[in-house]
Image: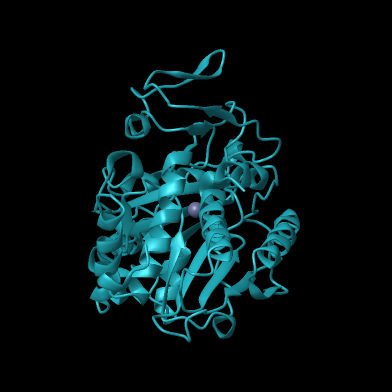
Length: 411
Ligand SMILES: [Zn+2]
């Protein structure tokens, strides 16, 4: 099956995850997609294919070379972001993209002036949305790459490889992709997530990530008699927010710069709740950012003379670089394989996290490879079919380099 047809089939499944659900997976429609993938995996010769009760799909492409080489794992996620609708996606296929503006809706353009990554895919076949939904390339492009690789191996038994473990996770977009990941069903030496971004990109650094809940208690009094008594928790919340370093926001930061981001606020006079995420590649700097929250809390509480501000911090994930740096051969072999297939490896710090970050800390070093998907989580998302094909080639090359000495390669 052509990779683009496979991809188009996958994005016809709505698999939006839900950050507020307490079930695993967070939405049932992810299981329907999982079931479809399971059938396809069996058709493509994978064995030990199963879905866990939490909706994680596992499978194995069994070794055909007496277990020579590393056991490599490949992971992609099945859910799409809750940030935009993923239902009734109407993809547009553009052949040999000419570098001009693309009309998504009559008043909505996907333009290289605003979205410069379009310049990377001039001449490529690309798929965009119709402007009303996200595309779902994050991460169905990753799944399509892995499955197309599996299909190649199935059709080419002369391609020798060790066991290759495959896992498709639910709920990555709501930070719970590896919550129920069963390491016993995924016995690998190391793994790659295949998730988002330029196909030349190689990621093994991500944010250290904390969530901070700021709960503010006011003193509600009838406003007519509130003088010198009333404390409006919403006023305190605004004061709190204003005291945070104003330049450390996502809209003012890039590269290795950390930020805090107010993701949600809700309140009334009596109670206000602010939810922040705090991010930094450098753990010490992240601790400084968290200290800012504590210092402001202490200041406001002493100002009002009671515990108006209550903080709860929660670690979400850590920077996998601290693990990967001890496994330089993994980095090296990706760079070699990329050059072998004509890519220019570009090591880019992820301004986010991945399933691989958690897995790395659980003992499976797990960098990320790109898919050819850009501007995900919204209607300007697009994927390059040309890059996805390159992604398949890259995985095959990685596996082949791992098994054969260069001179022994059959092709
Ligand atoms: Zn993703």
